[in-house]
Length: 392
Image 1: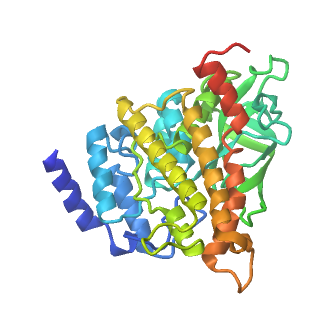
Image 2: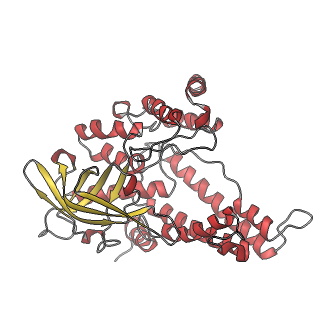
Image 3: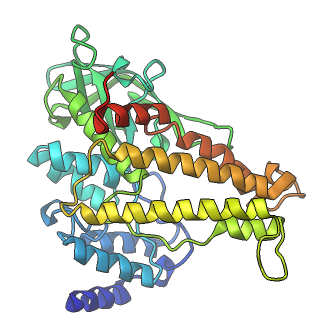
């Protein structure tokens, strides 16, 4: 493996530009968020052409075909030069793995290489105004129009829809079937007159979520994933990929180097003793507890990834990591504001720093963590029924 490490190191030194190292302009994906620096686009394409944006995917679909050990080396070398890489997004973490499992050969060849290159951004069309936690109540309809499918209806909380080129969607195709049947999984091109997107402004001030309207939108028939009226199975598996990413279980993820932000915040706002300890004993103990919880969670995530030698997304157990991670993130955001006192409740004013305002908005955003991807209550139900096998 030393030869592979040297190969990776030499290639990165030659191809990774200074603009893509350390902090700087985000490296975006898709067609709707162009980058100002052309060197970043070139870097994304260089990395994609090598297959190293999705190093564990098969080479024939735009991946690197690497082993888990090789990928670990790649992530270490990317981290060593602080390279920014476009490996995020729903294409890589959700629809890509789903197509690898359920897609036809044609679907894999048409869609996966574009995801690997970062040329196409995806979003998820699941929730509806009347179908959130009860997803099977969805009513967006898709009917057969001969050469194409026609879609009418509305989705909500579609993260990143305003920047997406394509959407993977659950639709109702048989209104007379049982609730969890008569649902199909379809891929839809967002760049057509029948698709309208409206961002939703949240209490945090950001707009990551959108409403998405389909008015006689069309989809190719060969973009139906799985069987007609049998999309619920595909849709559930995709949710496991989603929760795996949210829970830190995605194969090939780079482990970030983390600062102890709580300790730094406590030192700044609560103060320290001459010996360098947080001066308030209660706050100090709470910082220690949260720090240990974070560290234990990261170790458990790492162990789960290493034990998963196949590289496949785990099943219902992903809900355990999603539930714990979302709850921990929310509680830490809440405690951080406690440490900051009245400075933790600023929205906009010369009396608050950018970090303080960001903490306030982060606290508000953290509430969504326990809702999106399936609420905490939904995760607990899945764990009770599918993991622990408890009776209804």
